Image (cartoon, rainbow over all chains, first blue to last red; front, side, top):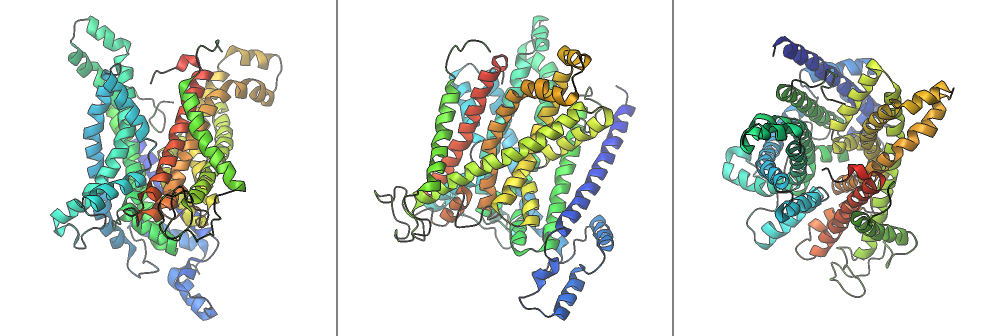
Length: 326
Length: 274
């Protein structure tokens, strides 16, 4: 394989990433500015004088022309300045950063635990699809995609935190990661919650990808040419099964990162999600904008990495813009 | 369609589960055991002949609240599928007919929107419009439309490649007429399966939003908010937390089974390759 098409592809895909980031940030700006009501209202009490209104509008910057506001927004984004929170009057950037120290570990730990559980399970469910435990694995994973994640969380709290008091029902040590033992203990139930739900859907995908490979002509041909099952699987199977699984993994990672919002609420973890929910309730626009931008960026970057990974796994991938086959 | 060899078991089980919830929703429009404002039941009452599911912490009858939750779940399903279907089919048709870069940019747009978590989209829209049932329905519908659009585009392209389209064009039929007499009749069975599947997931997403307090505002609470309220008192009255979750699972599983069953009926060749 020649190198240059790959590099060309990476550059092209990088351009797409930058354009989507720009489009996303612009739509975010438009969406939040077109709202009824001035963001300055969050600063004001009922019956504020016109002078107070003008002062508040000046602080928030909503007295500037729309275009100027837009360029401020873009300039600030490019240097990760999200302004100051309207309610707590703290800078948004560091606030988001501190929240990420809960959300990112929660997401990544859950993600890797899920992979280690779901990939072997999915393989077994496919390889043994005609046996009774293959069927049971399949039914359980079918059930799993229908279960709301917060419900699993509440049930786990009921059993492990309230009945048996093994793990805390929620919260995070105020000292953060300086007490790793307590921090990890606080994350056990949230991680279990995400893992239980996410393993179910991942198992399903791995199962169907593996089934496709197991039923494929090339695997049969390879076997008929004398290679053992493991050999054929290793040489031909894994690469073919990996491609759809990687794209699902990317989507799952993005969904987990966003879905962490719900789990954080269940366990009262001071993560990005709980900050967002609180900010939406208080109409604290700088925080909302900042978090939505960071989350969108995460989703887009994950998509970018997934496309690159797929390209490495399967260089036949179509030349289409998004790098996926129709 | 071939002759019916057997009744599709998934379809029957699925219809039973969904039908049960639909009946509950329908009845709740005309009658609930207690009014939602009635707080005379005693706080956190146990299961009894008066209150089949007990009462919540304000003394409201839980069965009545769960029934209203069913109504909301069904409403969200219908509303968002309607939005997703109309938006998705129209966009999919455009992309299906389009060539080259128009088609490519539409497909890229669908891909990006599909990769975008619905929950994030929903929070964006709630941040913009404020928390309400309508916001939730719109958000879920838009998220769904990308999935529908991508599928529609693929199906349209497949039908357009057929000879009868060429024949129809040669005999002077307009494109508009071709869409209605050839394309839509050929693709709607597959689309219906997707709608059924998405109907269930819409309920699930709405429940997550309500759990976060970003869904339908009280007192007409959805199952998500019921669960959220029940969490604080889960040790004393676990039923309040378990019941809405079980019903939600029933709805999603039920719609999944209905979709499976419809797929088997609509297209026997696709059976069980998964």
